[in-house]
Length: 104
Image (cartoon, rainbow, N blue to C red; front, side, top):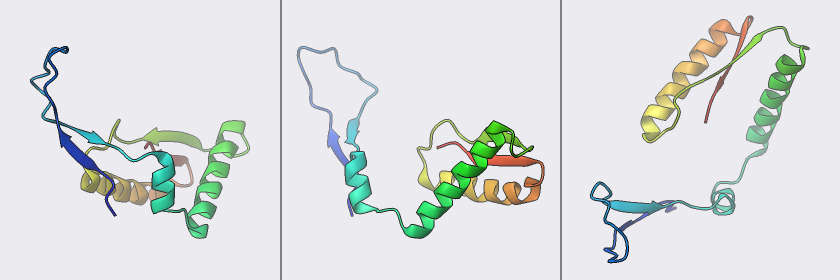
């Protein structure tokens, strides 16, 4: 499965060159991602349950605080997975008082 295709930057005489850009990476569309990595039933149920927990906190049905935490962007997949693992550990420790959600 190839998700990213990197192409070199072509010189364009009508546009000022950006000396700090070595290449552009075309990203797959959401439809392409859904086709290549369909959501499983287990994952869909997990997403629904987490959305319900968030809704309950926001509407006051759940008295915990909601904390949306994490990096503003993930450019290193391994680092992002490491952040998610560490957050999952902390989430379990604090689950009685705080609903931790990783921003993505």
